[in-house]
Structure formats: C-alpha cells, structure tokens
Length: 448
Image 1 (cartoon, rainbow, N blue to C red):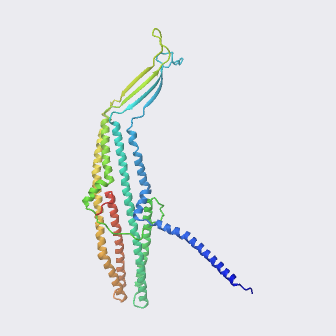
Image 2 (image 1 turned 90 degrees about the vertical axis):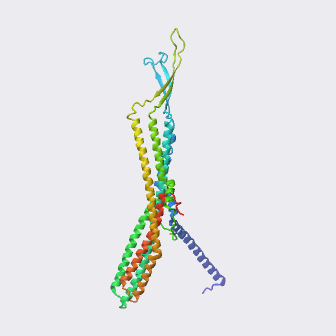
Image 3 (image 1 turned 90 degrees about the horizontal axis):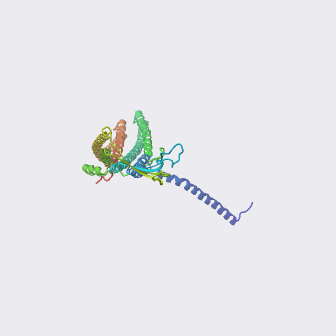
C-alpha cells in the first residue's frame, strides 16, 4: 500500500479546493450572464403611465405622419408667394427658306427674349398668407392628434391596471373558495355537512377559473392595443409597476376649465385658423377681379447691309411687350369663386361654434364621470367593502358552528367579490375620466 505524505495530501486538498473554487466561480459567472439580462429584460417590460405616453409620442407612426404633413405644408408659403418663373426664349424670325442666308432679307433676325408674369399687386401676399394659415392648421392638427394619442395611451394603461387588479381579486377568491371546499368537505366527512355544499363550492370555483381565463384574454387584447400605440411588437409583454398611486386630485372649477380650454385646445385654435384661412381665400377671390400682367423684352440681331442710297450695316431690333389678362368671363368665374369662398367662410364659422360646444360638452361629461367615480370610491372604501367583509367573516363563523347554511356563506363571498371588482373598475374609470378631461382641455394643468 502506497503511503501518502502530509505534503502530498495537502497538495491534493489544495488542488481539489482550487478546482471546486474555479468551478464555483465559473458557475457564478454563467449565472450572472444568464440571470442578469433576464432581470434587466423584466425591468424593461415594466411600463409606467408617463413612460408609455413618452414612448407613444416618440414612436407612434400616425403622429409622425401628421407631423411630416405639417412640415410639408410649411414649405408651401414661400412657393406660392414668389413670382412665377420667367420665360427665356430664342427665336429665328423671317429666315428665308430658299437659302437660309441671314443677310438676304432685311427683317431676318435672331431674337433673344425674356418675359415675366406679374400678378396684380396683393395676390401673391394673399396666397402666401393662405398657405401659412394652412400650415398652422396642420400644426394644430398635430397637437390635436397628440392629445388624442396621450388620452388613448392613458385609457389603455388604466384598463390594464383594472384587469391586473381583477386577476388578483379572482385569484384571491379562488383561494378562499378552496378553503370553503376544505371546510365543507371536512364537515361532510364528519357527518355535520351536506355533499351539495362541497359541490356548490366547486361549481363557484370553476366559475372563477372561467372568469380568470376571460380576464386574461381581455388583458392580452388591451396589451396589444397599447403596444400598437407605442409602435411595439404586438406580442410584447406589458407589465405595470407594483406601486401605483390611486389618489384622486381636486379639480378646478368647471368655468375655469372652460376658459382654459379656449386657450389651450388645439382643436379650437385649428378652427380659428380655418376661419382666418377662409377669410384670406375670400379676399383672394375678390382680388381675382383685377387683371394679371405680362411684361417682356426681345432683342433681335440682324446681319447684312442696307440697300443704297441709305447703305450701311443693318441695326439690331429691341422689342418691349406688356400684356394684360382680362377677366372677360367674370360673371361665370370670378363672381362664382367669390360666392364659393363666402359660403366656405360661413361654414367654418358655424363649425367653430359647433366644435366649441362639443369641447365644453366633453369637459362637462368628463367632470361628471370623475365626480361620480370619486363619490363611488368613497362609498366603497368607507362603507360597502367594510360591511361586505364583515358579513363574510360573520357568515363563516356561523357556518362553522352550523348556524348559517353554506349557500348564504357562498353568496356573501360572491357579493364581496363583485364589490371588489367594482371598486377597482371605478378606480380605473376615475383615472380614465381624468385622461379624457385633460385631452378635452388641451393640457393637464387643471388641478387645484
């Protein structure tokens, strides 16, 4: 038998320990490489309300499309406010076809000409002004679309919040019903209960399992909608933060909010711009009664000599031209255009009044929805939920001592469950009403 010295044994231990050490280190490195990205990815999936809004504003293609349209329209005023391009022409006049000799005929000449169309004074400035109004209309359309996008994102986000709370509530009630089943089965096995109590509890549990499936499907649909608004893949998981404030702020007075919307709402600003654009188009239509002008100059070069007795070289020719565009058919054209623009101006003024009324209606409706939800929340928090929980606790104690039948116990729990769902729904509706109110006003500075 070969003896191992103390030094050799120590070396083996150190070698073995070193091997385990490096294996441990390697395992930890692999774990870090695998686990850390997963955790980071999980953090990236958590989407806060403001974060969702920022992503949508930055990446939503519909909003980007409208912004590109505004940028395109902003390039038009300079184009329409500039004189039409001049015309440069080159002519060979009175060239004899028998010899093509420029010196043969006295009127043969090569001409270089320049002409320019000049609209009646004021027309170009009005066209430029109308185009500037159209660009500003497009800019306000971008602002209006931005408000709608923010509202849609917030509403989807709070709908997801409600569905998350509903899933938690369903799962908690499933646990309670499993406890009920256990109690009912124990009482049945000891001869103190009925089998129908066990079956009833199992049926209610199955209903909750079915409800969980439905809520999860609805949540996936809402997540798809939110991902679409944020221009993300539809199957991206959307996880909300664990800590979300559900405190409801106090609003400014309704009249103050009306006044704020008159200044801040892009929809109303757009309508005002449309009125200004229509007024400018009407002025331009009236200005079309006045003629446009065409001015031009030609220079003709001649060769050869004049015949005797005058003699000498032939002089070049210079020609000037002034043309006037006559509105000969004004009764069928210009006057009809003026009537058209007058009706369009009238239409935009009525449209502004209609939109102003709709904005106020949307504000009042959102305030009504918010006030209703806040009152309901107060009722649930201070009365209904507390009373429903106390009822369930009392029913459970009574059932355990055979003073309450199982059906009433289950009914009381179902009633509590429905109230809890309604509570979270009202929280979500209150937040959605605030999102709608902010969009109707045009900004979020509406709180006291």
